[in-house]
Length: 242
Ligand code: NDP
Image 1 (tube, helix red, strand yellow):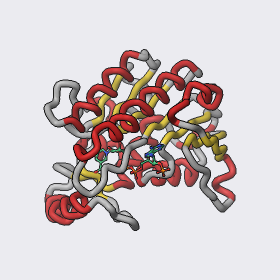
Image 2 (spheres, protein in one colour):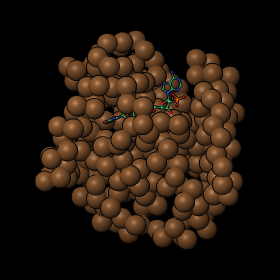
Image 3 (tube, rainbow, N blue to C red):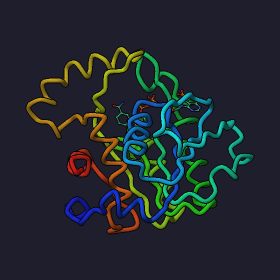
Image 4 (tube, helix red, strand yellow):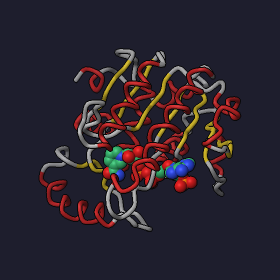
């Protein structure tokens, strides 16, 4: 795969370009790991966290963070917070509950589609050049499964905004130990997949740290095409780079 072999900027080279980023979904599992990666490596001048609540971050490495609390049902009224970011990370997602993702489709769609697409639209209008979008394996607008279909529709609509660069991530099952695991089905799935993850690491799973590093590293890789889709194997490759 071409992107993974293209030369990546060093952190020092990237830092010298003085870029700023925004994140939507920074309080989620994936978002938290991306934020750690970004702040540990001090990659951006400022990181604007756009969320529905404020969080306390303690420590010198978090100095570059600016928090903006927004009402996601009225995102248009917060268009300003999406202005002037070079790179945007969107890793928003509704907690689907214990009985699976189809149990509350309207709620899922509102977050995973409506909020995501509105964020992307405002980001584009605000001058964002590179959008890094967390989607999912098997995302397709033609999928029969509603979750995959929503993710696929989001991808298509995000493409239509015409970002200078759009990086779409399609991870398989994200392996993470949630402190407050409420998704029983997901818990069992992860236990069942543990041996698969051991023997075939890139087949059906991705460690959350690998995914986060891949999403961050993509900002440091030269653009290859306007829209790039990273499947689970590509994520492992991109996330393996230091
Ligand atoms: P989390 O559930 O850990 O985090 C979700 C984020 O979205 C949080 O920042 C949360 O904010 C925010 N959010 C949720 N609901 C709302 C709402 N109603 N209004 C505003 N913000 C909201 O997500 P993950 O990191 O586990 O997953 C992120 C994405 O990755 C999801 O879209 C998921 O579909 C996708 N994905 C997940 C896989 C997996 O195996 N888990 C596999 C492939 C893709 P707050 O903290 O305030 O609640």
